[in-house]
Length: 531
Image (cartoon, rainbow, N blue to C red; front, side, top):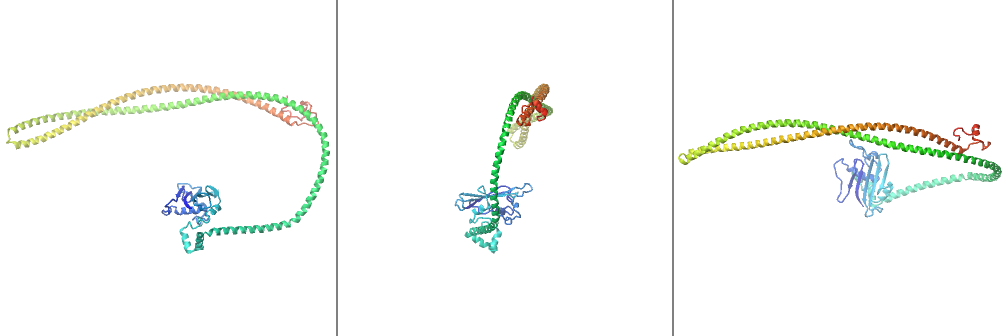
């Protein structure tokens, strides 16, 4: 048998569901102070059936339920499940995986479960008896228990040895057997008291038996006398029965006549019901048409709201496009000013470039003359070489400045072309915006025309709705009048039927006495009298 897993939910500091698997290599649970290591041990002890709150480090059992935090509400249930591997059949059960569960509700109710089947605490205790696992066994040892074992406090060392040797199981069974024997002795003494009470009541029961015998004898005499009296009464009842049978025949004839009249009234009532059903059908058809008109009106109203929103959106878009158009015009004016300024700068740079080119041509001519002088005279080579070097440096600087000015000129030309292209694109966009605005204005006019048509149709529908409501009101009044007539006929029918069923009459009077005479004599009600 091996402990495989421990599942804790809502127990002490474990507000959320926590699953601890004791796989191969797990030898301990470590952590800082206050992280819940001791609560894990308390959870194992609690699920095994611990009832002492002192052993759970609590004042009352309700405190083991998660009490919540400042940012989380408290839990209403504490639940702990402990699973064991029983492949070696150490536990006396056929399951290879045994899971025990204990639940405690904040209302005070609790339950134990064995493999998700509700059971008693005694069943769990008997299951783990003599396995070394229990709430008070030494398979769960706290720090203070080690000190108690060493000091042999309350014979704790003896309990440890007895549990290790397997004696504790028999001691528990001995204690249970002695308790049963004591209960049996108490029941035996109670039985003796009951026997004494029964013997004491025997004389009273004998006198009651004699009274019962006398009662049965008198009862037989009463039966004989009652039989004679019944025979005399039957003879008198037969005479009365013959008279009543004659009277019954007369009443039967009257009943048939009233039944015929009732059937005629029922036929008239069925005709009224048929007419009422036809009127109700017409009313339902009109009501359906009215509902369709109302639905159409609501649909037109929703379309009207949608068109208004679209119109509002287009107006906002038009104002936004106008603002963008004005900003684009301003930007185009600024671009034109920039183009003019760049053209001015290009002209100035062109003048400087032409001057530099003229200087360069002069320097080149001078260089050629100097080279002729150099070929003519080698005597003045050193002076001419220094002058040539100086002139070459000036030439390099001039060519360098020329290249820079050329690059700047090309950049200015590209900027000018890009600015021109942007201006053309803006003009095209402006033209497209103008076209969109004109199209939107046409759409707005079309929507206004559709809105006017919808309003006219809505007024027409409202007029038709009022006419239909007036027709429905008139039909309802006719139906109410028909219902009142039907109720009157039905009440008249029920009253006639009740008169036929009950036939309250004076047996001294003749049954064939006219109905009008019976009404005048007061023993038949005037209301509901058949005509």
